[in-house]
Length: 380
Image (cartoon, rainbow, N blue to C red; front, side, top):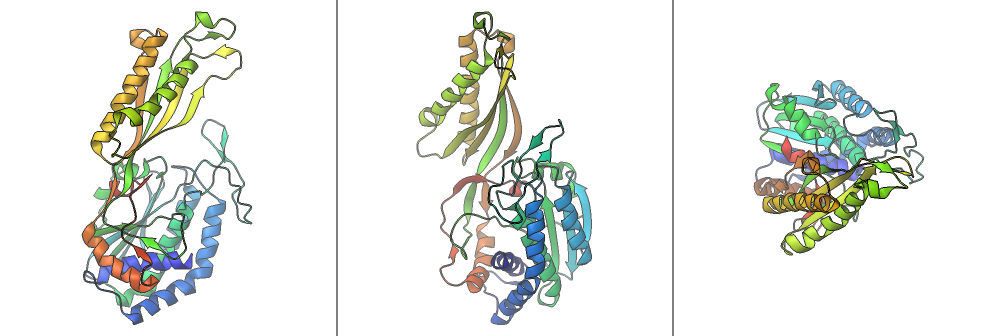
């Protein structure tokens, strides 16, 4: 926790103070380390609290309250409730550049099985009355902790930088809707200082003490979409009197798997995942509808268009083959979308020397391959 909080702080100070390609002085590095070390017990406690109380997209009430409370105590001007649960804190420190630093807050619908003493154990109640497993399986608990550690240290080090720091907790990154929700809620029309730079960090499996920061396309674009098949329901004993949407959905799942292998250029990266099949309730009843929840990843807009076009073709073809009427063809509902995340080359060049000074030679990876994971940070 200490190492990554220090890394985030170094990124921020470098962006606000250092000329391009300049490393921070040894004296400043020592101050950064001392500021982070002093806050480690508090940050560890905050991290464990957030980890033990994970919240799914747009329900991050507990986490947002922690962010707002901590930022207010540090003297930030705080605005809450942006995009439902988003939090923005502004700290002005004289004339200079404006930097925005973002942390996403939401957790995943996964059961925690780590056995940690601060593991999440409670299930989250959903709006329909059901309960869902939930845990921080993607590191957003760490992201929020880094943001708060950075905020405290930047207050401590105000004599060493000038400008404006804007930090914000964003909801609903996992479903690709949080950044869009904050923008639709007039994030950029509320009088917050406009950013000259924007930074965010993400955890990743790998050796401790290394940071990847490279220019160009770093993460894939993403789409979340639902495809619903409408058939004719009936009793399980008389399938000949029905048009079975479950069978159509099953055929579509298999059909989708040929899209990437046969319709996308082998040299173009793409992923198509069916994350859920939702249909029916009873063993002996054929339902009227079945819905597939899909997730797409891509690096090029033309590949995205190919994926969507072929999904529609496969879905329609399956329905026609099953005898579905023309006015009952499958429907596709787009839910969440973000384009690829592209790192600015000039900003990478500006902050990497600070990271190298902080972590040591060879610890900053600037040629790490593009990954098919996604972000919506760039959509704000």
